[in-house]
Amino acid sequence: MNHSPSDSPQNVNRLIGLVLCIFATAVCIAYAFFRASLPDWWRHHGGGIPYVVFWITFLIMFFPSRKTILPICIGATLVTCALEFMQLWKPDWLAHFRATRFGAALLGSEFVWNDIPPYVLGGVIGFFVLWFAVRRR
Image (cartoon, rainbow, N blue to C red; front, side, top):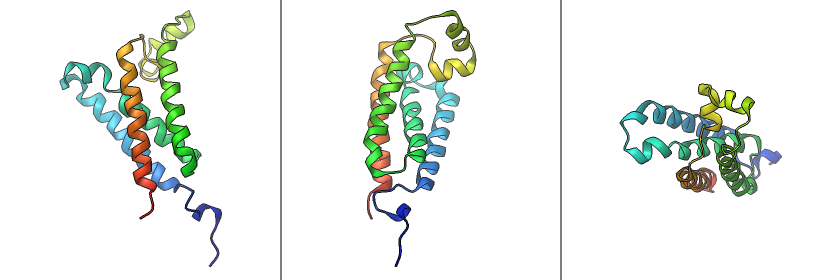
């Protein structure tokens, strides 16, 4: 029986990545919808968790290998933390972009140390979501 390279146990089914990405998107939307009714910490910082999980599940669709799970999770977490630190940089063109709803959602608008732990937690959750989704049955 011939197997294609995509049948290798080292590869992650892109469909799994798509389903997880859609689910992560739904969680992000639900968070935005219910945010006002959440306790203070979750309302102000909790969105970082599904944000990082979304990027992890999005990236696994483009790099669908078990070997890429950890690098994707670490990379998404580090980039998200770097974007948080970039909020300390305030050139006019970037301030105008961050003033838009899309820009604020994508890059944030102000640096907050308390945003870092949810990004790290999102990276850990994203790792375990992918790990459980692709483990051998």
